[in-house]
Length: 205
Image (cartoon, rainbow, N blue to C red; front, side):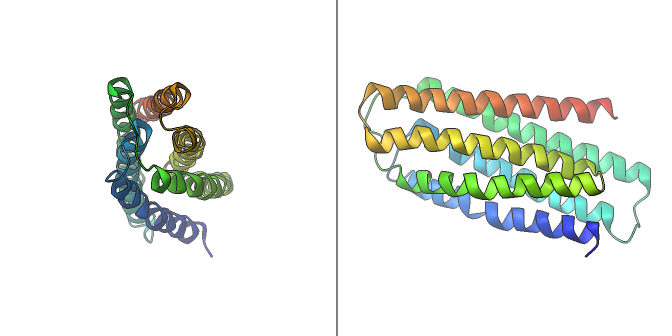
């Protein structure tokens, strides 16, 4: 299988695997009100949109060599800039929601916790996959996807810890602060990765 087909297939699987996340977490919000869970829903939705855009652009820029180098570079920069912007948007919403969180019963966070645990496993696999593909033949979109999935795997670890604390002790001060701190840590890391990605896209313009 060629590198382009392998990259395209990996991106397609990324879209398919990421699609259920926002839906499941969103439905879970009907029963739970954890700030981390709300923030996780916004993050997953923005990341899914970014992955879809990356998949479309990758297919366009690697299709039968029809796209000239100049146009391909422009499309890749815009795609990666969009991915960075979505990371920043998700992080900003997470900070706002964490600061507005109230010390109340968070309800059932099990759906969000389940998705977060599965996310740790799936995102780590995709992170390693994109890293390996980009090492074989460097590509700007695959490189940013490797960064995105590294962030996603670390974020899901943080979300898992925060939601687990809420599930075990929903009314304790510890779970409240872990919930808030979990959201802020996730947000800060996402924004940092997003700004770095945008800056790299701007520098190449």
